[in-house]
Length: 216
Length: 104
Image 1 (cartoon, rainbow over the protein chains, first blue to last red):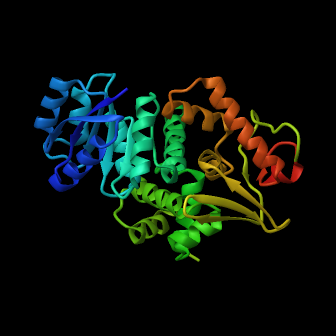
Image 2: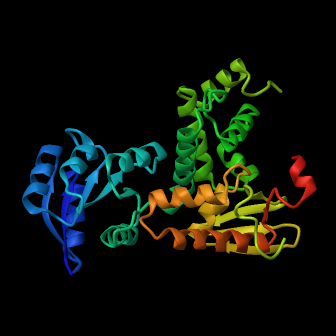
Image 3: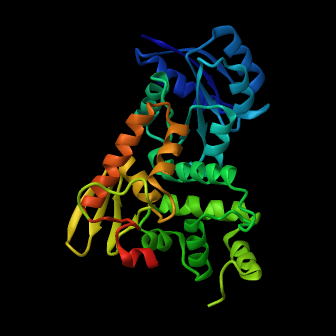
């Protein structure tokens, strides 16, 4: 079976190269290309594709607008410049079933498209545990009001914050907690996000200020 | 600990003396106590990283079911099997059945 694909990416060179690559494989047929949301949604309506591959920075509203227009049977893969936890969560919240960094190898893209065609979700392996822990945290906070935990940091995020306060960097945090550097990065991003700050330094300063961690 | 792990009664955490080594897509847990090496697949690595002493097996299962459109008994079985394997290899500690653990 040949799957029809709509490609939506503002980078014409990247999009054209991807279209040529997919068209060269028997499994895919690129039905249309688009460089913005308006063109992409029109193409989705017209071609009713099996797959939509869309840039997370598509001008005119990004993947959310495209997901909204695509029917439930259309599977959406979001391509992102960087493998970023926040972008991943945003893509899945928008209704996409898959997420991949543009730095991925071609076989990984093919694996992602095949997973989506089988009705599965696709998340880069290095980002999986961070996403699952995020889902666990969301469920916990829906179940319990948790008024005491103002910043809703998980136990692991508190550990990461304490290590940051000791001046320990991402790779050493990963080593201490026996997790991958990518997962350590996700925890750090979550801490920064939950504390409502913009950097690790601000996070530590706030944590010391409100007593989340103690000065050593 | 060997035998059936207490899936329903606690949150597992990493045993002491374990290091994670990654080379490309290959992840290995190195047990410095016994000098053994355990290779992890993608799922096992994700579960390992969720073993923070707070997240229960049930929560892992619930989260996986939110993400993957799969049969719940299959997901639960896969997660239980993986946690069992990690536990039998001495890589995880569980809070139940061990008085020292209960105090921590």
